[in-house]
Image (cartoon, rainbow, N blue to C red; front, side, top):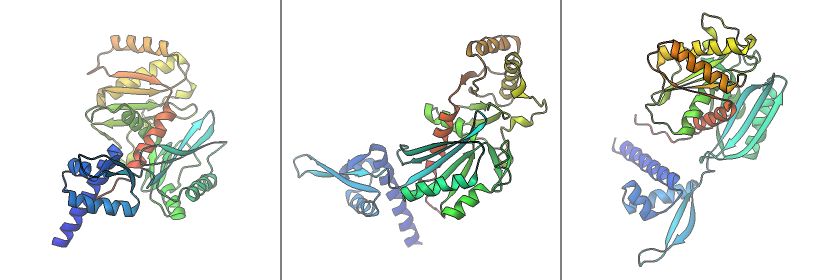
Length: 332
């Protein structure tokens, strides 16, 4: 028991030093001791181990208070890399974006491919190419327009994805952990992360692709709401059976107001982000203002229309995937 406790304490202390250096980038041992509240002797041992592992580098020396210059250490943000993939409809084609990201959330490499239809073999070739280029890749994240249930893509507008056990296939081919996330969930997560909202902020994102039904992501109290089998937000199954892609602008905006009204009555979010590029911004704002005056709601959320879905999608996937590289400590 004592040995187990000692190992656990060491892992906790290693992670404290790791996280402190990651946040400030460079520091001396005395600075790390002060930041982590660990003794200098303990920090010396932990820094030595992290340096041998390659997680930190020796950097420059800096003057000390009357003593000999102190050596600084720099966090190695490239020690572990993430391969982040997003699949998105783009004017009737498939946009496949593949990025290599380091622990600083810096994009080291990025490829974009537009295909007539999604092809698994092309995706696997792209993954293999980048893994060969960057052996430090330790996790793969894939954002898709759909949901997985027990590892199988079950609900998706893209027939090429339906029935695929995507994570399992990629894991078996490349022997790396893989996570698969819904595109709108990733986008609302990216919007949340980019704006650094407080954990009590509630945000709903609604995305309208060009030729597919809309989807919704729900971020409440600091975490995604996924529901049973991850199906929360599948608004294309609402009983009104709207044909969104066939509506004219006036009907579309009116139906969108009703949808936001419905979501607001159930979830009462602080903010609703609408990803759509098919309506005039001024027309939408005027209609939403008029709708609010004509209908009583429990609260009136801030509604934002923007066309930055891909940006938020990619940001969210990077954020979600990089979380998988955070050290986990087993307390059992």
